[in-house]
Image (cartoon, rainbow, N blue to C red; front, side, top):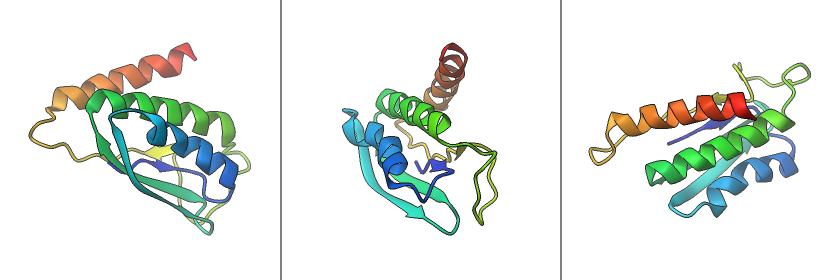
Length: 112
């Protein structure tokens, strides 16, 4: 999984976004790369579906709280503070897990 966030310059915000992936049991952070020119952060991770979902929701909340797209500048087009969350599901991880995470994330965004 490689979620993309619209932040690549402020190290404190980058570390705050990445922290849920580092600290969540069952979520395995491979690496993360911030590009200052594009002002974009790409995180590479894998793990248990519920752990990943929880970490994504937490990281998304951090991103939304700290990234103002009204003042954001960067070479890469962006859709939001959390730009995209492309994922590759394994045979052991059925589509229902992805659907469940999408539903949980929508619910979390309306209750925070």
